[in-house]
Length: 357
Image 1 (cartoon, rainbow, N blue to C red):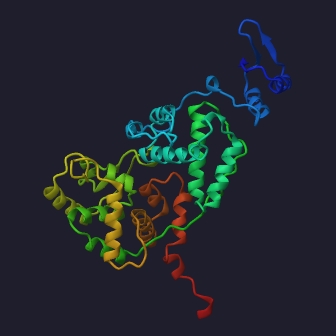
Image 2: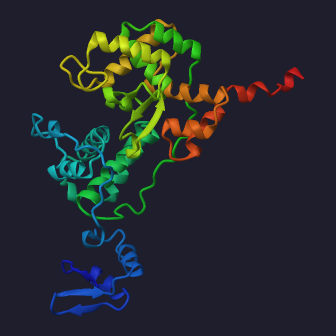
Image 3: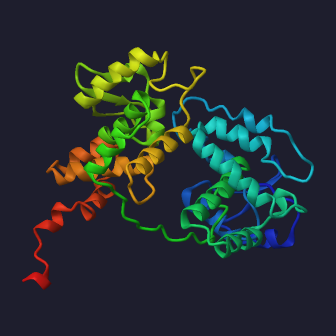
């Protein structure tokens, strides 16, 4: 059975009477209806916009990803000020329980705090869909990207639906349509110039690996020494996006450079480490790529992810099967990989321009 507990309210009582055969239990002192999928959906539908429903008894706790436990104690130990509202402890605990990736935790915490600080005089539980809509309108007025707005919605949904146990909290919050942007790509000649214009062997290995293995920046930072398989000429990428393991290519050229780098820098655990033996920072990788591009006189801003896009596009241009590229990139669907067909120039070279006919 589905038991329904609520504070006395005439509107809620009237709506309960509209449910399928509601009965009263003297033993449990609550209204109940038969537990089936139709009735459960009916409860959420009936009370949409009227009441928040805690359905924890009907929705099992699931771990979103099997990542390593995330350390977000920095957010707990921040110096607090009275004028600023901080993310609740329950929010942090749930992020840890779900084992969200560290970068996702940072985004959720930051965006949720921006939301609640927009209403400094209201308690979080008092905020309704009206305030959420007003906040989203504010973001649109500030010309925030669709991605930023979607992430803001996710951070808010996480609190109400996951932390507070209110499934289907946002029935009618419209999301902006996902933008379909083509990947930005640079030529192989420009990438070779970037590799040549790095400051040292460590930086050269970083730029070379991002391109030659099609790595995401986060994947590069997580690489450990034993993940470089020189016998099979493969790189083992563990716990990547969506908790996937995969293998990518290890270049003979890069392997020679890595051996020189290893003798000179002597990393202990991670392939690339900071000064104190900790994992190398993402901002440092970005800075290395940007500076190498500037030295190479590339007249646009180059990011680490552009090297991954270039890897996929150049493979496609050289005739590599799209399914192999999908595997190397770790894409779940070929539809994601197919976007590179729109930027691979070999597809256009065979087409005769009508002006030249």
